[in-house]
Image 1 (cartoon, rainbow, N blue to C red):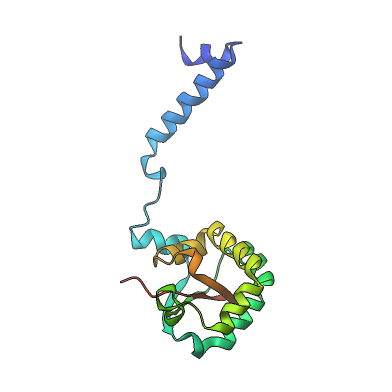
Image 2 (cartoon, one colour):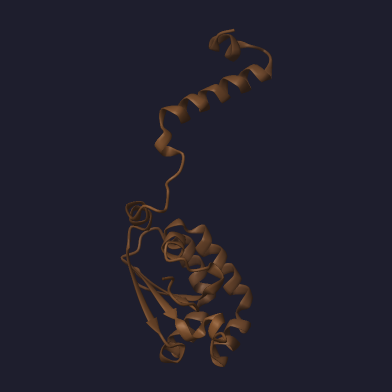
Length: 166
């Protein structure tokens, strides 16, 4: 049975087999398209497409900014959803707010509790946004450690309650 017999066949399995064969042919013709490995820094840079900076601070030093960002979570969820290009991604490691250090200070914890449903939704949107997720994941930051994001024009600050991976 040749390929044209499969396509012209009244049997729906024939069409299914023809489509499957075409998919296999396409996949074997372009093996590099199967997946982009994230071990290659060039791949990460192409996906992110933005300058990514990191800084470490004590949670108390940026307390007001973090609390304001948490309070703005509902607004920032839609911005995360729509973000396709940013000039700069700044990841702020709140090292003393990490779970291993006892968690965030009381004022930040209270705001997180107050906005916990929004924070869950924000984390889901971060996972769904390839650019932002790759920026976070390439630095080995668990999404559960993201406390808030802050947008300023075409820049974003991501607050993470964790220490940088070594």
